[in-house]
Image (tube, rainbow, N blue to C red):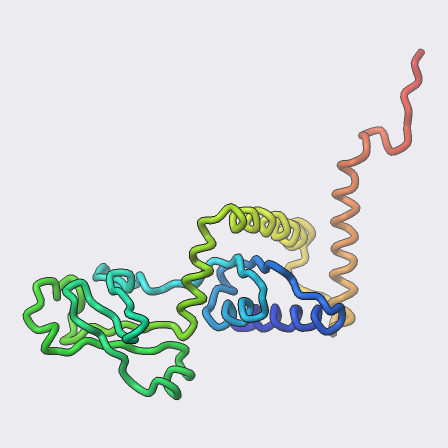
Length: 214
């Protein structure tokens, strides 16, 4: 998925430089829902209507990230039994490389815990927090709004056009080399698609015809 967000960044920057314009809202599918890209978008004043990539529920049936409360002031997590999970590792170097910060409980706190079997099979419980977690939470909260649903419907309308070109018009891959060739092929494909769509606005017996009364 790395190429798609990078292409979006370039298009947004090109729009800003060439036309001095910045979109108010960006809508995209889940491939664009990583924390770094969402933070980049929101940092430029663009409201992201994008499903957030979320793997925190993938815990093999055990307690998830949502079962642990985060204390922002203390920068730690609290387990359901009230025991802390404190930050581990280098907060600057390692976090920048992985994009996350790790938190871990103490073995003495987990030993004898009445719900340990529901929590972890290890001697301690570990949790990772995205460096862009605040942005992720903000964007996730938008998914319940009407504005987000409206953006989703508009995105599907646009994506249907691309799907039509690919599956109905045979544009599974480019046949012309270079950027110029790609540009020409897309222009031709879009022109053909628009001509087909225009036929829906004309009567079956052709444009400009009139039926004379006998």
